[in-house]
Amino acid sequence: MHLEAQGGAEMDKSSCEAAEEWWRKETVAVVTGANRGIGTEIVRLLADKGITVVLTARCRQQQDLSQQSRALIEEGRKNVVFHTLDIQRDDSVTAFAQWLKNEFGGLDILINNAGLGGAKVDWDLLEKRQMDFRKILEDGSCAEALTEDEETAKECLGTNYYGTKRISKALIPLLKPSIAEARIVNVSSVLGLLKFLRSETLQRQLSDIENISEEVIDCTVKQFMEDIERGADLRDSVWPVRLPTYSLSKVALNAYTRLLARDLNGKACVNSVHPGYVRTSMTFDTGDISSVEGAEYVVRVALLPPSGPSGQNFLRAQIAPF
Ligand SMILES: NC(=O)c1ccc[n+]([C@@H]2O[C@H](COP(=O)([O-])OP(=O)(O)OC[C@H]3O[C@@H](n4cnc5c(N)ncnc54)[C@H](OP(=O)(O)O)[C@@H]3O)[C@@H](O)[C@H]2O)c1
Image 1 (cartoon, protein in one colour):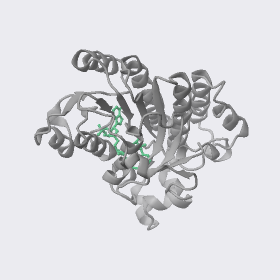
Image 2 (spheres, helix red, strand yellow):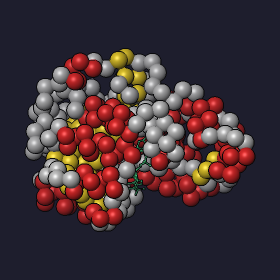
Image 3 (cartoon, rainbow, N blue to C red):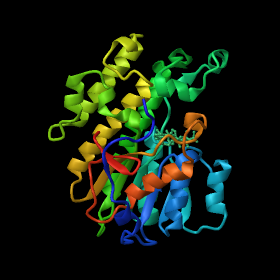
């Protein structure tokens, strides 16, 4: 499997790069999971364009942020503010939405970046077999070095899918009407492509944009959880072969992207983007590109010109099938 984007129509880079700057300093962007990795760099790039950015992270206090994220605020940028946000917790999400409303009256851009990998790695086994983490993702070798259980599945799906849904629902009512439409960008993955689901029925249900509902997506996720809970052999199932939990969480997220794009038509552009295989803690620094390069793809989608695409899947800079 290639970890990079492949196929699809190249997004018109020139129109994006030379895009009319529809944003202003009053434009407010919220980035989730911005304590490290791609999230930190998304904040930096948006702030450098003069946008007001709310850097959110699970930690409660600004002083507990990673050094890179803290520096974004403390090195003198006036347009970056911190607020705590754990997208898995109702109380955190409610408090954040209230604060955002009081402080800024709403937002223009939501970047759902927070995510978890959904597997435990047996480093001793990898070392014994002289394998690295990347190899497992590339060709599935030494897959037994990755463990996915009830706990990792709950955390991963609870963040990547349910958490993203929770924060989106809380903030959608606060999206500001804007000449360029509000934007929601879901940071997804190439592992979330529908083709990795080994069931044509599920593929069909999750790509039936007219009829798709939250119930259909939730039901798929619940079926997966039930299999995990009863210790089913996932290799002999409908679920993705590689990193099944993570992969399914992004399949569900992509389906939610399409559902939101349909329901928010005319109010917000909603897209998914795979940032590439990026050197972050999630990939144990085995990626091909830096967090800055990964973040550039996300920001590009967030700042597409007015009347840009919605309900699309970007594999880095290319629009591709879900
Ligand atoms: N790296 C890649 O190659 C790659 C490829 C495709 C897609 N992605 C996606 O890109 C996004 C960013 O990943 P990354 O590579 O930058 O990973 P990362 O370095 O592990 O960062 C993930 C961030 O998400 C935060 N987070 C986790 N659970 C959260 C929660 N409940 N509420 C709020 N924040 C939470 C983490 O917070 P803490 O700092 O508190 O742990 C961390 O800051 C993820 O959605 C990932 O799936 C990454």
